[in-house]
Image 1 (cartoon, rainbow, N blue to C red):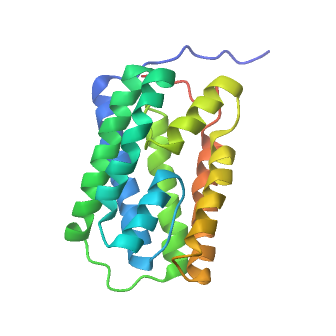
Image 2 (cartoon, rainbow, N blue to C red):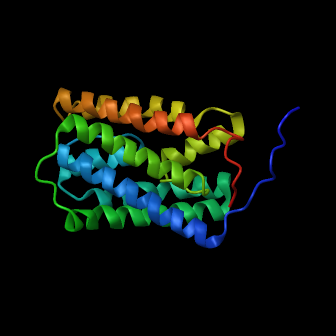
Length: 205
């Protein structure tokens, strides 16, 4: 006898708000690890890291600016609710990435540990946001659309795009740091690929 599947249970507004807060705090802490160890990640966050290292402007500023052109795709493909949640998530990550450095001080961080745990923290944060119909904008919007429309696994599509960003990173960072960044990107995307499968999580917002 097959087990019965419970009907979808919508998230309450306070659950969505708490998820946005917790998810973005996880991401911002991962960003702090990456900044301390001079590492990269993928998607628009990876672009923000590259511009931070190239110009000296903070990650939070670049992350907010880079995502601006992508909102039209979010509105067109994912709707206003998703777009507003994503805008809030991007704003919070930009803010928290600026504040985290004031809240904690990291005197020593092994690059290997920073890459692995930073990737895991960002991946967990993104997973929380995905499950509450939000994202971190940019490429995340694109991969979620591809998963919803064509069934392509978001984590695997993201991994391919991130590979291109890592290649560009070789022009700005030492090869060993780019190599460690690849390790972090693999950890991040495996968390999403293994845990964000269509039909597995029934909660909706």
